[in-house]
Length: 256
Ligand SMILES: [Zn+2]
Image (cartoon, rainbow, N blue to C red):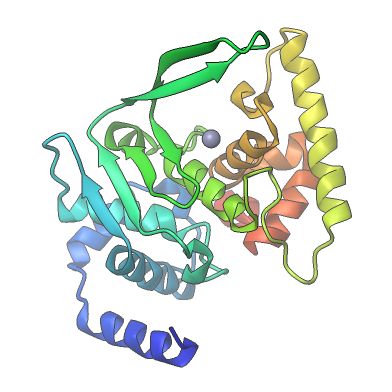
């Protein structure tokens, strides 16, 4: 669609959508990771949440029903990473499938002897390439404290990563960023975490990040918005790159 036409349509959606102030207040109260935002940021976050909920289909499954409060919570969480990027960063996909709890996914693994192994995996979220985002509501709801875990941000970070193809921990960078600086910061932090995990050490960052560079980016994105001071302390170069990429400084915002 032509840019100006899309913009006009979005303005119309915003002008005709009313969010109940009490519902909005509840959404903010449930999301401490939005603390410290000024009125301008909160206004833009609300607009992005409204447009996200309008342009994406939230599809509950398994007999589950989503209330307006639940939809708004997901919309606000989805709006946070793209607050200073814009909704078009979520292009090329359409649906958010919401399960009441964790869900099982069939997996296939082919081992070195070419033997195919079928197995099931218990998941709380997933992002499909050229497909939907899957979320467990139970897990979304659990992101009410700043503990570093946020499944919505995790899966949407994968979506941003997928803008350049198969996820590899390198989303499309802005013109004022350099791939060399990104790679240097992320690979040295990743190698450090892998070493700690292999040595059986306690890690400050969720050890799942050591799975591969794509998971590292998604997990560090969750932590960036939930525990920015921790990321800044443990991997300051990664924090700088994420701040430049998301165009936000949550450590500063959440300090107050
Ligand atoms: Zn992941």
